[in-house]
Amino acid sequence: MLKQYELLTWRQFVEARDNNALFVLPVGALEQHGQHLPLSVDTIIPYEIIKQRISPFVDIVMLPPLTYGYRSQTTVGGGPSFPGTLRMSAESVIYPVRDIVLELLRHGVKKLLITDGHLENKWFVTEGVERAIQEYHGENKIKVMYSEWNDYVKPETLDRVFNGKFPGFEYEHAAVNETSLLLALKPESIVSMDFPDEYAKRYIHYSVWPDNPDLVTRNGALSSAKNSSAENGELMIADIVEGMLADIEIEFGGVHR
Image (cartoon, rainbow, N blue to C red):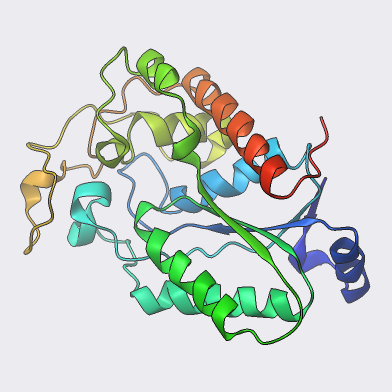
């Protein structure tokens, strides 16, 4: 069952906390995702997975998502080359996470899942959590789990979706994975059904400055999205839900099927 944090009264908050609900903080970004997907893809995917596919099995209190993410990097998100991407500093991720965790600690929350849809956020979310735990001097103890949806997609599923030619999540920005997930989770958010069918001129396994336009396509996607489908999205979602529910049960319990 899903409850939205911002719609609770303080008494309802206390009831959810005392009933040991799992509080969830989705973290994303505002980053270009080609001409066919909205800037908020990295927020939509983790939010909708929890809302639609996890909350029927777990008592969830969903916090409003953090929609601003760490600086988009050229080789995984297009970087600074496109209008609309808001490339925030490390502190812009660290401090909101730290403050939210500190406040949840102060209010007695004991279970928190942070689910992240923006690759570049990981270590700054981690820093925020660790600072909060180190700085808190009260009696409450909180368990925090951090997860990314892509970690749950099985290799055999990726082989099926990509016909054995999966290029890696870094090079799949705004391509088949994310487009298919939006088609399955929130198709009304798709801006255009004219999916890009081109690849960056080259892919590298290092970072380089200044920005190099050869590393991104003209449309902003790093790979072709032509094989995107809701069916492929559902294949991946099945893996994500299975794996996430298993980990939630291990760390927090309370999964009902």
